[in-house]
Length: 82
Image 1 (tube, rainbow, N blue to C red):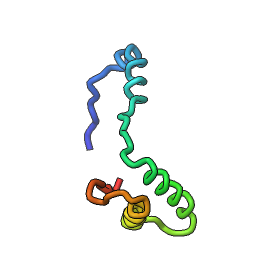
Image 2: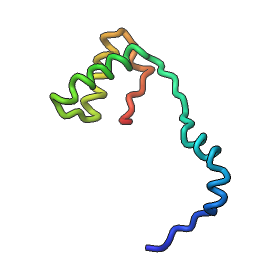
Image 3: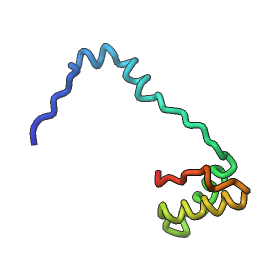
Protein backbone atom coordinates (compact mmCIF):
# COMPACT_ATOMS: atom_id res chain seq x y z
CA UNK A 1 0.00 0.00 0.00
CA UNK A 2 1.86 3.05 -1.24
CA UNK A 3 1.31 6.75 -0.89
CA UNK A 4 -0.98 8.39 -3.40
CA UNK A 5 0.54 11.25 -5.34
CA UNK A 6 -1.69 14.18 -6.19
CA UNK A 7 -0.75 16.42 -9.11
CA UNK A 8 -1.85 19.63 -7.32
CA UNK A 9 -0.11 21.50 -4.55
CA UNK A 10 -2.03 22.98 -1.63
CA UNK A 11 -1.34 26.48 -2.95
CA UNK A 12 -2.73 25.56 -6.36
CA UNK A 13 -5.88 24.12 -4.79
CA UNK A 14 -6.42 27.21 -2.64
CA UNK A 15 -5.81 29.50 -5.60
CA UNK A 16 -8.39 27.64 -7.73
CA UNK A 17 -10.86 27.00 -4.90
CA UNK A 18 -13.77 28.82 -6.58
CA UNK A 19 -13.38 26.91 -9.85
CA UNK A 20 -13.12 23.60 -8.01
CA UNK A 21 -16.28 24.33 -5.97
CA UNK A 22 -18.19 25.26 -9.13
CA UNK A 23 -17.16 22.00 -10.79
CA UNK A 24 -18.21 19.95 -7.76
CA UNK A 25 -21.62 21.62 -7.65
CA UNK A 26 -22.26 21.15 -11.38
CA UNK A 27 -24.41 18.16 -12.17
CA UNK A 28 -25.48 16.81 -15.48
CA UNK A 29 -29.14 17.62 -15.99
CA UNK A 30 -31.09 14.68 -17.34
CA UNK A 31 -34.49 15.25 -18.89
CA UNK A 32 -37.18 12.93 -17.61
CA UNK A 33 -38.98 11.39 -20.56
CA UNK A 34 -42.05 10.23 -18.62
CA UNK A 35 -42.60 12.54 -15.63
CA UNK A 36 -45.92 10.93 -14.68
CA UNK A 37 -44.25 7.54 -14.47
CA UNK A 38 -41.31 8.97 -12.53
CA UNK A 39 -43.59 10.74 -10.03
CA UNK A 40 -45.85 7.72 -9.56
CA UNK A 41 -42.90 5.44 -8.96
CA UNK A 42 -41.26 7.87 -6.54
CA UNK A 43 -44.48 8.22 -4.55
CA UNK A 44 -44.88 4.44 -4.39
CA UNK A 45 -41.26 4.00 -3.25
CA UNK A 46 -41.66 6.59 -0.50
CA UNK A 47 -44.85 4.91 0.74
CA UNK A 48 -43.47 1.36 0.51
CA UNK A 49 -39.90 1.67 1.77
CA UNK A 50 -40.84 1.30 5.44
CA UNK A 51 -43.17 -1.65 4.85
CA UNK A 52 -41.17 -3.89 2.50
CA UNK A 53 -37.57 -4.35 1.44
CA UNK A 54 -37.27 -2.83 -2.02
CA UNK A 55 -34.93 -4.53 -4.45
CA UNK A 56 -34.07 -3.37 -7.96
CA UNK A 57 -36.22 -6.17 -9.38
CA UNK A 58 -39.27 -5.09 -7.34
CA UNK A 59 -38.88 -1.43 -8.33
CA UNK A 60 -38.48 -2.31 -12.03
CA UNK A 61 -41.52 -4.59 -11.90
CA UNK A 62 -43.57 -1.82 -10.31
CA UNK A 63 -42.27 0.70 -12.88
CA UNK A 64 -43.43 -1.59 -15.69
CA UNK A 65 -46.80 -1.90 -13.98
CA UNK A 66 -47.15 1.89 -13.71
CA UNK A 67 -46.09 2.28 -17.35
CA UNK A 68 -48.87 -0.09 -18.36
CA UNK A 69 -51.44 1.74 -16.20
CA UNK A 70 -50.35 5.07 -17.71
CA UNK A 71 -50.59 3.64 -21.25
CA UNK A 72 -46.89 4.18 -21.90
CA UNK A 73 -45.47 1.86 -24.55
CA UNK A 74 -42.96 -0.44 -22.86
CA UNK A 75 -40.70 -0.84 -25.89
CA UNK A 76 -39.18 2.66 -25.65
CA UNK A 77 -38.38 2.57 -21.94
CA UNK A 78 -35.17 1.25 -20.47
CA UNK A 79 -35.56 0.36 -16.82
CA UNK A 80 -32.12 0.68 -15.26
CA UNK A 81 -30.87 -0.69 -11.97
CA UNK A 82 -29.62 2.75 -10.92
